[in-house]
Image 1 (tube, rainbow, N blue to C red):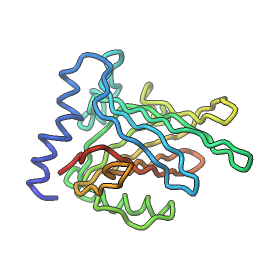
Image 2 (image 1 turned 90 degrees about the horizontal axis):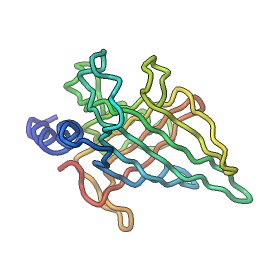
Image 3 (image 1 turned 90 degrees about the vertical axis):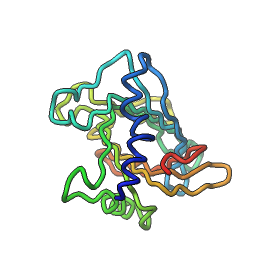
Length: 208
């Protein structure tokens, strides 16, 4: 990763996902993206990053402290219900950890993990991923209040999703798609029953 990119990250996206959180004293949406599932029948939804005055991140002062952004993520996607199809919708939320870049851990490759996860859902390697954020969407890691995740059926009933984890991969060179916006990243959402990948779109580029 280039020095110029690190500096740009520090004063743009990383500013929003860390320093800004310390200046806003309310539950306020900082960023909002649209989501579209990689599927033959794609579910769509919304991904939001918020500051929360009503709660405090549980990661402060523990082993994740160096990656605690004090920001909160919430995502929701619609169910698809019909005579020949029934795909549950869902909700996932939790405290955001990051940013994780290659220099964070000497033996870690953000882009390689991104490619491996895309391959696991039948996709070719995507854009070169520069940055990773992680959200534990339940308390399976032993941190109470880390997050929550639910499946919402076509009947409207809901159930908890276990071992839920979200990875958010972002890249510099976003491509514009008519009617969708800039394709800025991938959300990889994992639970005890499998992995889903959602494409993230925004009305403007997030990273230069």
